[in-house]
Image 1 (tube, rainbow, N blue to C red):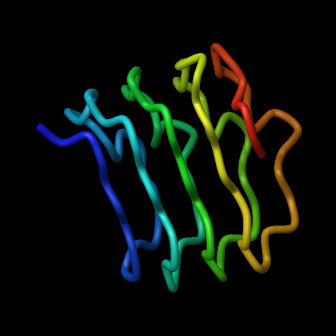
Image 2: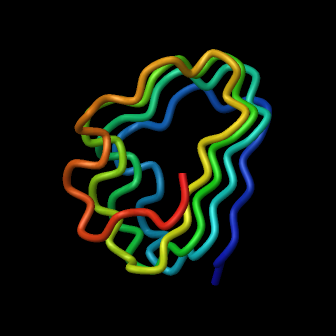
Amino acid sequence: MFSYLSIDATLQRLEPHSFYNLSKMTHIEIRNTRSLTYIDPDALTELPLLKFLEITDNPYMTSVPENAFQGLCNETLTLYLNKNKFLTAIDKDAFGGVHSGPTLL
């Protein structure tokens, strides 16, 4: 059973249901990807136990779309979105569908 996942270098997109069948995941790091450009609004669904999500050091990620974090509901979730060099826009509704907000941005 996995509870920690670290994703690096080759990831380009987080597609719908990217973490399907990984509902016991508690910690996800997505950092130093050379080509991450998109997070689908349904990419992070089905992660009820997630406590820590780090999306950092992704040089080609330019925006976070509406509902990008929908389905996240753990009251103790910590979210890091730092060091994304060209991240210039976080949609005002990026956290639409989140049952409890993140503790740190």
